[in-house]
Length: 203
Image (cartoon, rainbow, N blue to C red; front, side, top):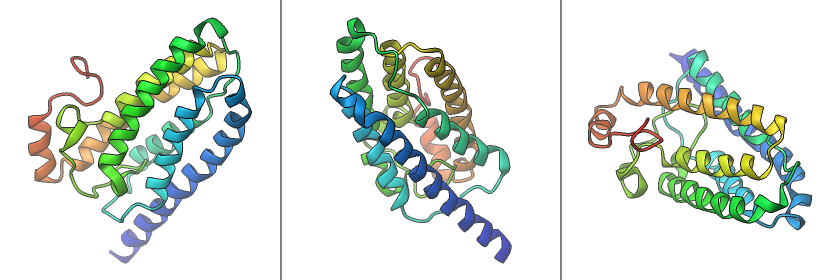
């Protein structure tokens, strides 16, 4: 039991440290790009809130299985290695507006979770209010919208590869999170009420 508790704590601390370090890297890369495309500020506000909620979140039971832990870490890495290069000026306005919509949705979802947010599957309490009454992972839905628009605006091979990796791991991560959360009868009941995980009508 003691070794399990220590492993839980190590994973929890690593979760916080990894996302903080990757955020600093993303901030450095995006900051000069704001002058070129001010819409990027929405992505940085979104990332800032996610990091804040992760670093200062409350404790809760967390998975120690290698596969879901790896999905959480690597999925976040793919998200934060996108690069604001290859901007298509003719797509900047429409892409920026869609990025803003996705970022706002993710932020609303994160605000509803508050200090429950994390990148490794954990149970810090079931949230079924606000956007969670409509879809089970609204933060992820916002990510899909935001970074699809980012790829549309910055269509480089690097960003395409990062997005494909991120999107694939995101869907796998949602499945693994729900396996862990479904050990809680409250989440099983919630899952029965709210049909879709990330994409209404599809998944």
